[in-house]
Length: 267
Image (cartoon, rainbow, N blue to C red; front, side, top):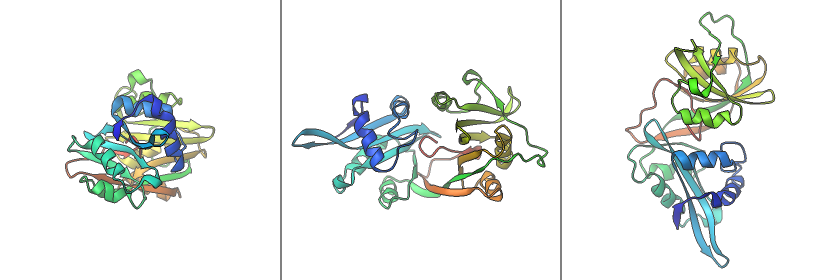
């Protein structure tokens, strides 16, 4: 049976996410993340009947991103593969939405599942990590300016509020009142994660501006489309590619050129 999830399912969802190695914030083990998906999109579970009663064996979620239903998660325990549960979960989540997208993992079953619902591979979203550098030689770099959630000028305000629970820095690039771009950065000790960034200007300049607002030589992790000039800049700074996902969309989904950093689970 496929049904909408409730908070009573969160422990079972966390256990499934952990089986697949997802035990970080903004994954199925994170209650705040699950509440965000449930509140702003759809969260569903696959349930089977056993001798001891109903058991949750899979889950999936969607949020709205760029006008599309974006699949955030889709997991079914391996021993229950072959029953069509993943496909039924996906149909439940996006079946009434013509515009669909996701960032597919490298799991061999993932891409074919998404392709069956019209989501074709487009480009790679690269997970990059390296040391923060202040690029004083770039004369057009302006340090990001911290703003409050109430002043936030970026899209997806719900994400700004979501990451503020982890003391995120909300940055306006350029003028605080008339920014050319926005960014959301979380931190843990001397390690920073640039979760999302948009700009009307050059991507590499926006990335340099965010780094200028952070402590030099601290570690930075981020998620950048392979086609972005920001990815080229980070390659030049010897950032390491830790992993990548594949952006899959239906033909009518447009990722705007203002997108510099997209979160693989929340975009």
